[in-house]
Image (tube, rainbow over all chains, first blue to last red; front, side, top):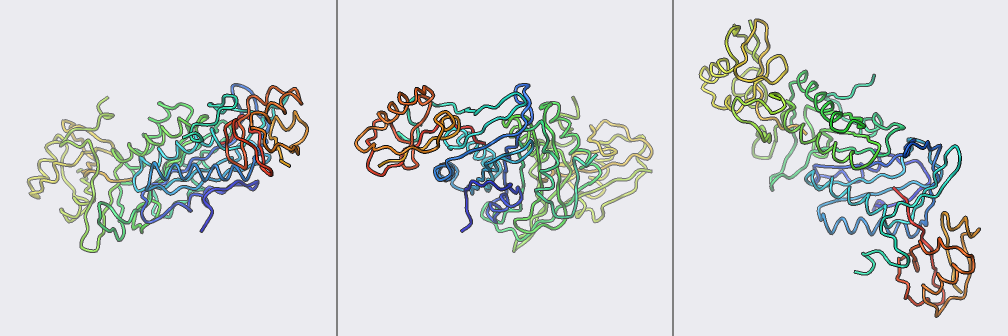
Length: 152
Length: 152
Length: 77
Length: 77
């Protein structure tokens, strides 16, 4: 079987990732692509450095696809995330979802990107002209409190 | 300038269409791909035939991108639709939207596909094992009543 | 003269994708009714109408040279 | 023995991505507090903790051979 979730330092191919979910039962495919943006809150990014805890990150991506397939049983999902140094406009993440009907493809994709930002151990460091900083935009962190899906 | 909206009888390339909207200002790209599904309400489709009023259809696609750019001023949009005979899993339509932030890319894409199904003169004929039929899934048709954007 | 365009199921029912008609001075609704009765085709009632590649209301008056399109319920996407 | 893993900003603050520690019998919370005080690093408080590649609550008891990861706020996507 082809891989459903992976982390790589190689460039990501939109066509390749998307084609993995195209199938006879699906009439809708939604592909979300996260790219490196030049300006964030008026500050100019030169490039990003992504780092990961790869073994755990791939497990967490798999977990997200399982959560999605529970919520949208007809969905087929592939997620790929790139790490290492990424330049402006480089593709950082691709989420491809196919479903029989279009509404589910949008909703399931939306779910995936939000979950990635919550539970997958990947970090980015912004490099600006005048400095650098590790970004943490996770919402639910409280010291020592595991995420909700961990205590269900 | 590259074309933003077009109708073609040639196969559509997901990577090509998507790359047209990737840019330095955008951090999110949403690509919706409509494919030919084998089963609809339990009935097996053999293939589809798409027909269009091409000059008007391209104008209507342009109109939709303008509506989107009014509603999501930071969005960049490309829409391509294929016509002619399409086999199961072939790509019929690609909508690529880039925006600075992800929420807008999903919403704008969603808007586009709904509008395409309302106002763009493209028709599909389903071919089954035991017959064929022109499909009309337009919602707002009343005899002689122009669509709402026409009377604003 | 004017050109009337037909598509999809309507084209098949009428047997051609194009008809020439001197429609200048008529309203779009009158053109529609003429086609409906001439071909005994009630499916004309489900069509939206376009003049020169834009949807138009039925009270639009046709001008010499206008192209009139009958748009059955669309099903793109 | 156990392995402690550090990432991103925490790795840079500590100066290494890996530390060996005999932590069997300790709770995850105790390991966290030990690292926080030893390195005087309050940013440890913002970390989630994982044991053997799964998030785990702080009252988890560490077993010989467990790998403990300090997960600073993530920022993938």
